[in-house]
Image 1 (cartoon, rainbow, N blue to C red):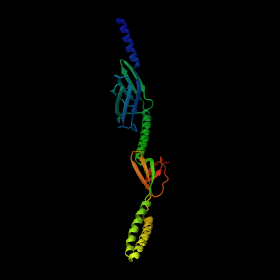
Image 2 (cartoon, one colour):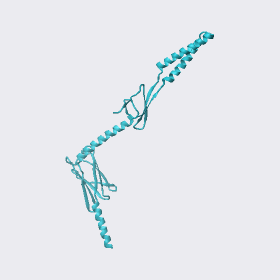
Image 3 (cartoon, rainbow, N blue to C red):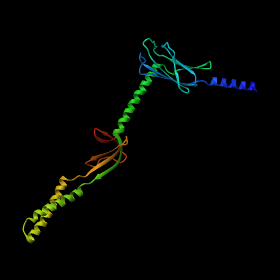
Image 4 (cartoon, one colour):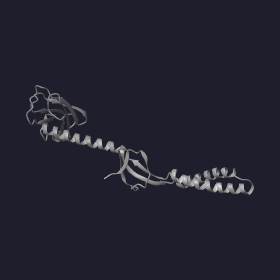
Length: 244
């Protein structure tokens, strides 16, 4: 029985030893590899192991710390005395139970730096565009006509009638007074109506837009705008326009 247990334990530990691995290896540098540049290093692999990294031209061995189970991180700042070649390679080593597993970074550090920098710049530009468009872009949700002519004309007619009637009432007496009052009211109504048409026409159109950031804005137009519900629009220099 003891012999069987020993054999099973031996098989278990052998399988565990062979299972150890480095699943990923990454170094994230800045735009260049000049002195002062900080390299952020990360390795994923078998937990509770000793992980180190060597970089061509850097005499020191960089030791990584296990921050989570199987996740190792470290950093290194390039020094003036480091002599990095044109295309430095980086290698990670994971050691456990007397066995060492190694992995070489897929690309030289200078190419990783260039690729990372380009990706970061592109991401930053896209983020800036999205952030700006959140506040200035949106979708038309409603278009309505606000008619003020009819009601305003009624007010103008009534006001004209009252003023005209009062003035007509001051003329003549008896039947003549009544006729003058009626004529004054009629004339005042006509004049008030015409004046209101000329000066008081408040009819306009309102376009309601739901902005990408969740805000709502309403834009007024004197004439019927060429927008339709669902149109994608953008505010440029304070003016609403359809997006291409």
